[in-house]
Each structure stands twice: as C-alpha cells, then as structure tokens.
Length: 90
Image (cartoon, rainbow, N blue to C red; front, side, top):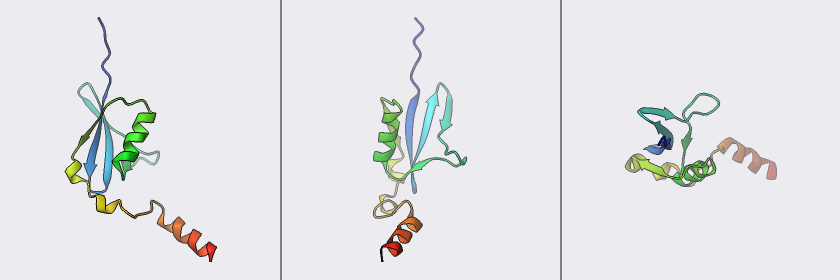
C-alpha cells in the first residue's frame, strides 16, 4: 500500500507575525512572496484562512509566545494609502 502523506503545515510565530513553513518528509520549505521575501501574516486568523483556501486540513502553530499581538492591533497594512485617502476626503 503506497499512501502519500500530506505535508505538515506549520505557522511559526515571530515578533512581527507568522511565517508559513511546509514540512515534506525531512525537508522544510518556507513560503515566500513574489518579491522573494518571507511571507509574514500579522494575524494567525488571516494565515489560517489563507491556508484553508489552499486546502490545508491541519495547521500546527509553533512559537505562539514569540508573536507580539501589540504590533498587529490598530495598524494598517498600508499606512501611506490610508493617509492619502484621508487627505483626499478633506
């Protein structure tokens, strides 16, 4: 019986958010953006929703204590855009 194991999906907590790691066998892969920088999700909810859309059935959260939720709360992901929209409205 040749059953292919699904890769393990790991959210690794960092002070700035969560990185996505995929473990296939003994190899660990990190998710990167198109611009070749590690993809960091500011919220675990956003990361889990993204991974669920990709078909992940199980996600392991590692290093939750490393995440600083204070850096996430009340921060816009695009502060310059927010300022531009605000100045346009006035």
